[in-house]
Length: 578
Image (tube, rainbow, N blue to C red; front, side, top):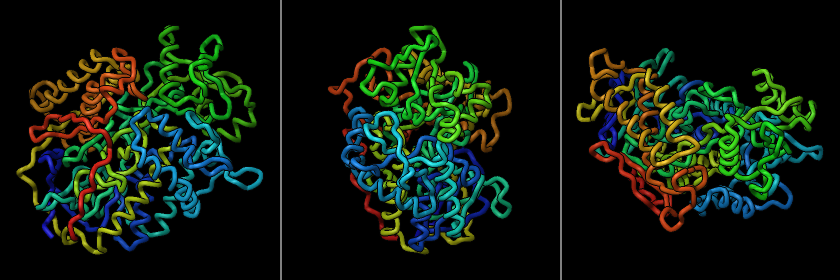
């Protein structure tokens, strides 16, 4: 086996010191949400030496923030076929039906295995799993825990299982770049660890199999429901490694995020769709329900439709938010069914028991990501991806509510099965104590000053947010290019001051700039309105010209190549013998 070296498929990598330490494993999983820990637990149970790398603590990812629940055909009268139909409708013509069929048919079993792992879902008086409805679902099929704390419970169960299984974990570690061997095959990752004692600073985990489960990129916008760790690290790493990404223009803006003011930035409190599923109404300042007549499901229409309706009403009335009215629930229902949301509202001086609460759309979920096949393989041999970082084809142009946790479960299990059939235990890429040499042939990305992070977010919110047009996207692309060019010239003022230093904040900002540029390029290329991609200058869906996916990769000259394909699926890459 060739010795790993820290360079990527494109020859591009982050500007970081050479690794000063290294460990080996059979599999390294980057991310500790539902997708990452499920994949890691399955691989470890099959006898593979598995290391989990996570950016903060094990339970600090997006999974713990999931309120509504997990969708699966578990109730009487419900079927996977009905779940499939609802998913395809929400996806606005761009779902990969084979991927959706895998999701809905394997989903109920995956949920039951999660219960066997220790997750405790809310139950009805009869002892069955309690199910609710959310937008786009024609059946009550959303399992929830702790009322509105489903993610917290799933994260708790998986973290406990990981600790009980003795999974090796490296916390407070930002993944940097993919390692490859002399044949261009995945051989591990480089990472920067903060405060781990024995493993501190930049190091490497050598492994023949790498699973990206790094979550989303919501922090590319000023206001988002995503936690601070969601800076697009996995998508940016994959692009530098030569992988393809797909459907990145389809960013879902959750319709009902607690409105804290026009200047509020960072992670915003989510008001779960399950609140509308239990009967809450969207109203304007006069108390008028404006979703009636907009869709057969009214407030429970797919998220893109509700978000657009809110934005239209806001524009018509010159308002910066609408309201969610659930006063008819009463105090007891709020306290028992939605305690987390109730506490968040009251912490911000609002009481949904006695008053409608202000809401507005905010960036929530990336329907696109690193392009994979049905086994989670990316276009880079030895690199898999699952969860929000991946584009499996399940979500199409708009994710159906509560399908994300299920996708993480189902495709993590598929990835683990694929890896265990291909990787022999003990087949690490390099000796455990080896420190890979510095790569002098690769191209170092210019470091992006963390001070411009807020500028990137404002550029994206203004030009590539809920409402988009050729003018706004072109302006955003030019502004992002200016940020990149200034960094390449030596700093924010062309090199007259000291350039940014290598470190977590500058690496995160580099990743945000990367995904922002790709998202904007894809959104500019898609001249139609479809799903959660809303072009004001092209307000109609155009199946004749755009019934396809946009795939982006980085060319050898570092430009972005945008191509079209009929499907996110691709012929699987044959794994070489280990």
